Image (cartoon, rainbow, N blue to C red; front, side):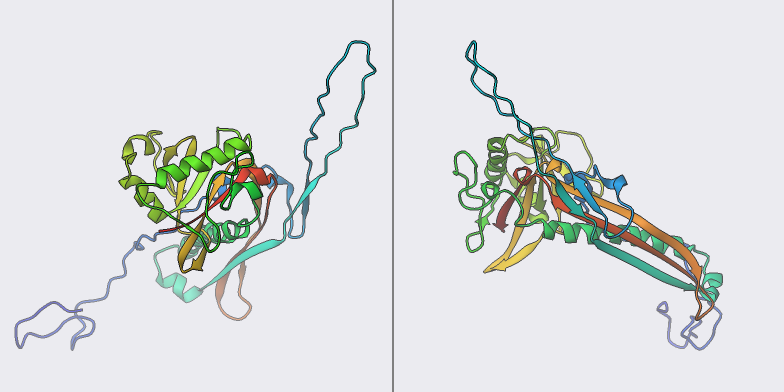
Length: 308
């Protein structure tokens, strides 16, 4: 785009009649913004180092519950041989990326484009994992941690269900977060480490609610790129644009809450390689990431089905 000129003054820009003003390629790239990813914060990756290739099966052992019996002096003791079933997590998913840079382009550029593209691929991989897993674990939590009668003891909490989503406002948003905490209390879930992942519009309602910033940001932590926005009622709150949605009259959201021990997730980059193209004069960089996930303690995960 040329600068304004008086009538009759020649145009010396690249698109004008003379080529006295050259095009300049900047040595910087415009900053790119990415969706916040939360998966690493709300799951456990205890089995990360035990996977090597796609198709691996990780067998997770569980701890048996020991029976407590009444004792009477002189009685013969009844013994048991504790048994507990093992659960399995299959590493059955894979994502890859591959880019190619022609030699002539590499020579002409003063930027290390392959490094820039690799960094972008890493960020896009995180977003892809979040999108897949946050959708995949919907419907897998304990039956008493969702629906119109949530609460394994009291069945007294309405967390919404298909056809009857909860309409969240700045007046009731805190009440529902507290209800989620009560649902976990009835499951005896540890108080330390609890999380809630909410859509970004709900985070906005929280900031407009009575609690405002006083307790929401009282932990002194910055938001960074994992969407962390503060703490309320023993929950660390995260906001995400990647939560699974459904059209139920209007767009509805599956907000997830629980404890990281409820869901296991294992991910590993098994291949990252640079090679020469066989078809042209170019370098190829590509990577393969394998992963799997499973809700291993259903009582440690819950769903809040809501709408704006």
